[in-house]
Image (tube, rainbow, N blue to C red; front, side, top):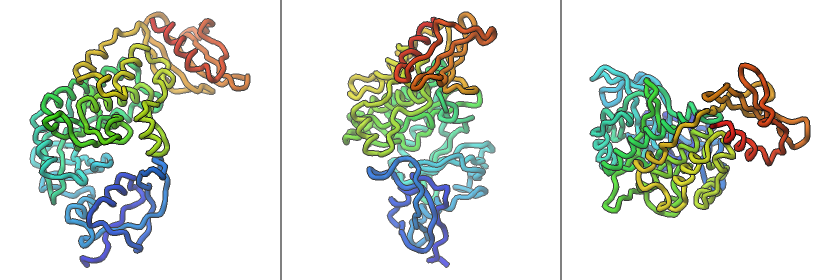
Length: 410
């Protein structure tokens, strides 16, 4: 019957869906059924997952038709009388993504169904995106709406970069190449008066051929006459000025790309505070671990480029994506170091290839309290390079590792 609750968000729902649900005008909290999900982020709630019982339901009487339709998406459904949904690819604050079959053109696509977007504004931006063509942008094929739910039809990608950066990051030369390609796509967007607003590893993709592409333009926005747009995007990549009421700009997109490069190099985001208020305070103060403390194999020149892009003062950052791209044209080191999977009692490990013999640098527990042991050995000979080995105090480990990598890099 029409008034009977017909859908309850299940235990796989994420915090973003809770926020979306609470923002729906027709959403109604009731006491009919209880399920478990992540709590929404707040200043008093950890941003990490914490399961609590939440009661929520939706019916045609308590949700708008668009919201009710979006909650009930299932594999096999036909969207807009064109897209045959196959399987969900992911969900987030601004929508959910499905692998779908475009029955009109006969090919597979990624279909993003967006939450709480103003249709008139969204499609002015989306139709601009469909006109963008670049080898560095995940192509947007179509933009439209069904049941007042906006959607974007884009090309499928092999994976997003957040899937390949864990747990210790990507080899620096490769990470820089990925970001430089994405910056070229971003430069084209900015020249077209579009701001991305949500640049992060999850929104940079690898094509089937292995090239990096800037994608997920679900909340892209047209600049106003002063070059700004409303603040938006993942809280972890928002520039400091956005947390103080400022608007998104080219320089805030640059900040987000710099945060992304940091994450690709370190295997983690620079800001990992448990509480949202603490995270915002750290962003505004520019308080985050030095990149080379987390990833000592990264060269000083590259770390300095990342730090400049993450400057608290917008005017201290790169003025454009093109300028940032040019700044990342750093000479390639004679020997490259790549984070490696640990073996045995290793805590961290790196493989070095290129000039001379291949090496393995590892950090291990020491037999002495509050100390580590660093070993540097030839991969084929298993011979230790004594000048790059030894026991060190825990607090001195980052400094010692940086010196070892700087000495072996050239």
